[in-house]
Length: 500
Image (cartoon, rainbow, N blue to C red; front, side, top):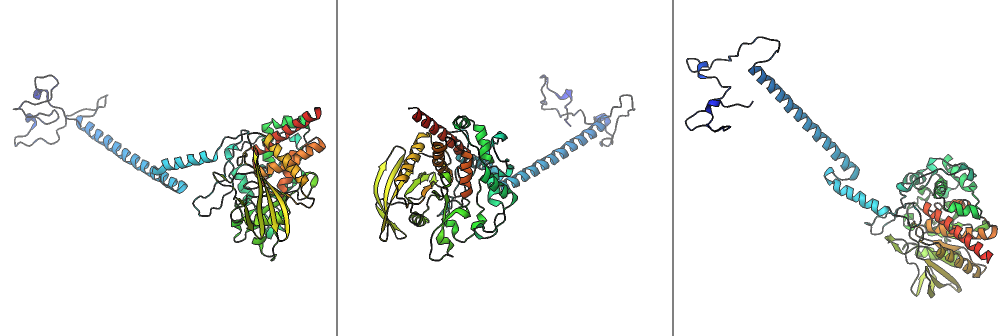
């Protein structure tokens, strides 16, 4: 309680509480001299008598006891509140340490790291409004093994298309593609239990996906093609309903195989993979290459080979495949580096020998959007010619800024294929993973032939056929839309030529 000085002890100055030098302070709540006993001891607990009146007021000492109790309660409440706050802070600190590997006091670092990651994986598209991410690689390893490209959940906007335009029943949510969840389902779904997938049993979900890929179709005449190319929502719905058909990594559980794959979960489908010849047929590593045969227009078998960009460890395997398959043309649709390594420089400046194959550069021609290298391959007494078209104007997991250069490249490759010897084998196409840009190029090449021959295109059917042989072909929704735009432009060019 606050003690008050008696007014008699104040100085003449108003509101002053200073004492005169010769005065002792007299407290209002201290017993006076008259209230003290003769022996100088104050009387004990002299409380003024009161009667419980209507107001029921307490005396001064009762009020003091009451205030002490209130004060004690406030102190106790504050103590428990402080303990509660400390406990909550401790819990939050433990959660942050478990979730992010750092404490609460490092939350600024965590936020900055998460922000940096989102900034690194989110990019504005060059062609449509779709968003996709880059492949994330562990840059700390001396020989990093790139990770699978991660699909951005923010771009996974799924709108339902017109069911009447499709001839198959849309599959369930788990079959939709373009998100981390769907990719995880692809990679973790139990698949074939025997080596190479022979004799394995497909799950109901996988059977549904295979049925969709075998039967999916959507034929477009020129007018429908032009309209469809501008309908982004319908194209997104169609893309996400189409199964990716990725391979379960457990099907390739072989020691040492990881060094032969650029991306851990982008693997060749077993039934159509390219098998390199080996003296020992049981030497799986020597016969393995991450590549698949793909059919061309009209069911032409093994018209193309889709493969990953060679790594330092697989350059020799790549040239063995080129020689074994008698390929006359290589189409390369990637830069050597795009934030990280996308492809090893597998060709020489002049001459080099890989696996007994001598590769010699004959000429290099630089065009506006691609370069053309002509090689001479020699193995033993046999000598062949090989062309490499290196298209550099196509960013990873995105689309070119302009469609005409891609159409020109497709037509140039077709002319070169017609000029190749009749005994020539498939055209080899690769980007980095061998599914995104590679899928767009092969699909465009097949569909241009269909448009010229039939006057219609079935982009959905072609996509399904490609994915049956190599999972993930035409990797992003943006790329799927771009193929529609390219075919729409090509049809207009054909119509304009016909009118002239």
